[in-house]
Figure 1 (cartoon, rainbow, N blue to C red):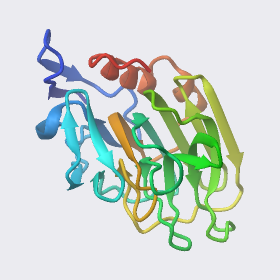
Figure 2: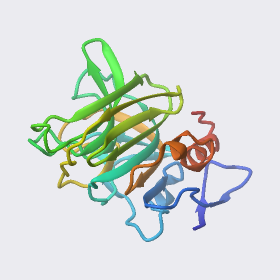
Figure 3: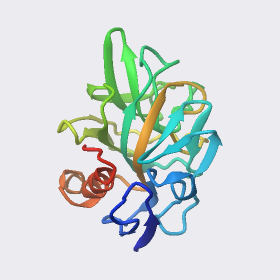
Figure 4: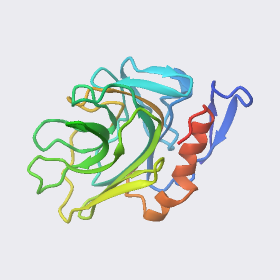
Length: 244
């Protein structure tokens, strides 16, 4: 599956042929540095394009989002198994849920509506990046995994989850990961996944260059590989001078 994308950020080559290296289970593949006309396009083959909510700002190389008021709805429903990949950075203070961003996901503060999300959070003086998913035995509490500090630098993050197995977050920029085993089933959210904002909390801001969503849990080898989705993300981001 090869897509042709106009990229205003590439002065030397204004048109680019792009073929996602891992297409099995691919639901969403978004090149968000390509401006308002091309950034919302879903290059996963037949999937819905992104629906801007409010007024996210498309810039040369990324889109700027604010949780709750300016983000992108993927129109992709929650899945028992799945994966997110994203190149993003936090741009708000991250002192609590009012100014901590959700990079991608469908988190809601409502009881048993937590879904699956990749986000920045603050606990006291600790600022971290987390992946969270809700399970049937969690009593409405999202089970989380945590990696490096959620500073304001660009990061390549992957979060995967699998019903009856658990979930794991990877910070490919710093080379760290954290996982949690869960033998119970995933509790699905009624909300679709959003890029740059959750449903009703975590209202911070972030910039997003690239994102992909899979309807399956990526394998260790797929995440660890210097090819595949990792190379897709790094190669695309590098076109705009972003190193992850």
